[in-house]
Length: 262
Length: 158
Image 1 (tube, rainbow over the protein chains, first blue to last red):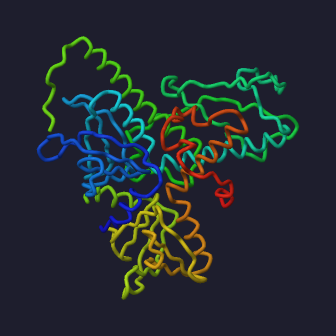
Image 2: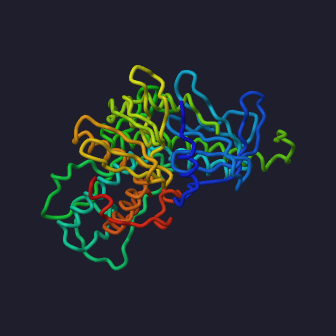
């Protein structure tokens, strides 16, 4: 298959922002050695070259249909991109420290076009609802949120906005979703609080939608984004816990030569 | 440049709402129109010989310009080379319009702009950052001030 490289390299070098870049060690399949490479993530494309500023790109990994996993490996701070399907690859990486590892894992988990597509769909709905509620409730933005009991819809100005900031869903272990009210059904009389509900999420069976079962644009994206996000949340949560554990463990050991990296 | 070819081929086999036989002509002088199965998956346009499973090629739909050429055809220009275009001939004006629309909306950059717009607007309307609940509010790619212009009419066609 011809991948029109010039289009990719042009995109890489154009003015749109780079999403993440840095050194990582990439494992060569053949001889199981790790080589340090400079990685640049833009959109759903992970480019790599020997060092920053090199004109010659070594390669690119298109990040669709893969899951990010913390690797069980003899190398520390390792993670991998696992492509699901017969004969498909697993790319293995290692970072220089736990922070770098976690940072890359989190970013890669949300890098795919599929993910962004579901997220945009979700926000689009929230936006429409917010506009509707804005219209029906008058010009004043809502200043109080879910801490109030459902019956109390008072919009009295309370001075500075008391923002309710839900905790990061990863540590809380739950995924909060926008209410799935059809926009036509919003009451015109008084503005409603957004009801928060905990998504009943069935964990996915595998690390990624199995071959042939991709999230399609036609689904109920709310449900699927919640599932997708919760699944990624679990992965990242695991990665995070492992990192914290290994960090504690390391603090108890003296540093030694772990593995020789090229 | 190496790339994950098998995985890309697998991607090309995923279901897509935009897949059709179109006339396709390459950008070089002397290129002629050929029947190809053209398929839009995420931000890639794959094209196949009509009886083959493996795509001949994949075009990344970023930083490109999609234009209506006439009632039934559209073009995609890459690399800021406005005259170096791929031409696609459709069966109808309606089909042509659908392709142009879909290709524009398939771009990652287009989606990112919309995301940032929604994020900003939802925050303005509700005082709440909608990305917080997903724990991704700090991701670089979703930042409001990463140099993009927010134009509300970007989303008028959505």
